[in-house]
Amino acid sequence: MTDPVKRTNEIEEFTNLHFIHPISGWLVPKLAARNITPNMVSLTGMSFGIMAGFAYYHSQNPIFAVLGFICMIMWHIMDGADGQLARLTKSYSEIGKVLDGVCDYVTFISVYVGIALMLPQETTGGVWTIVLIAGAFHAIQSSAYEVQRGEYDYWGHGKQSAALPEISQMITDLKDKSLFAFMMSQFHIGYVRMQRRTSGISTRHREALTQALEDHPDKTGDIRALYREIYAPSVNSWSIMCANYRTIAIFIACVLGLPIYFFWFEIALLTPLLVVLIQKQRLSNQLFSLRLKEII
Image 1: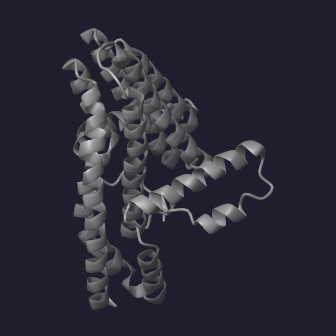
Image 2: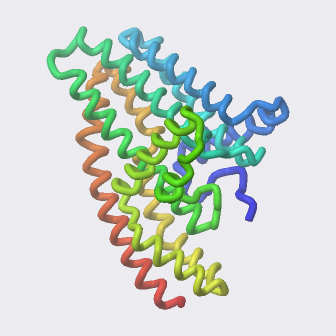
């Protein structure tokens, strides 16, 4: 099956669907015509993220807050374009996936550090502790959201490029790799482990679904349709964890002159919501297992 270039609309977050990805989609054919690679697009997006961090360091001036917001929007557009370009040119790779994730984290690290360096001028005590805790929770929340999207594309639509890597195979593949590839692979293994542990994805559930598809190939369409029916609302509810809302929250907090509140948004709002979403995921797994028995 050939994976479509664009993302799956029924689980696409609103601002991505109606703003970010239409711009990315317009840009992708132009990038492909100039032989620009997905990794080059990822690195370009990261450069906008670094500029956003510099701008938010000066965000006591509202002009710089707006500039930081614009740079973040440009990063979102590049972040949407690199994956579409990879699928269009069939040039996706494990290293590309890792680089995309690294660029995303560098962007937010730059912004977090930029804000944190500005904060001691107006607040006291524990700033870096708060920033580090918020950053750690951000990594967990974002990885959980991305694995939810990938699982939906893989099981609901059969997109092979969205398959969650098997850790045992990843460890086996470490042999005979260059030092750089080895280090990137180790990072990826750790990232996948974190995704599985913080997203409510059940290994037993995945194994049962794999077995059902293997044992009943004539029911593949029905099984995938059931998956989409049950999990589309669930994945949509996870969209609160996407980067877009952080970008908006950062801008609002800085414009209001209360940037420290963004970090509390990460810690005190998004983290409890993550716990709730994990519990909902487990309930969805149970419902799917019951409904699956009716089909097979």
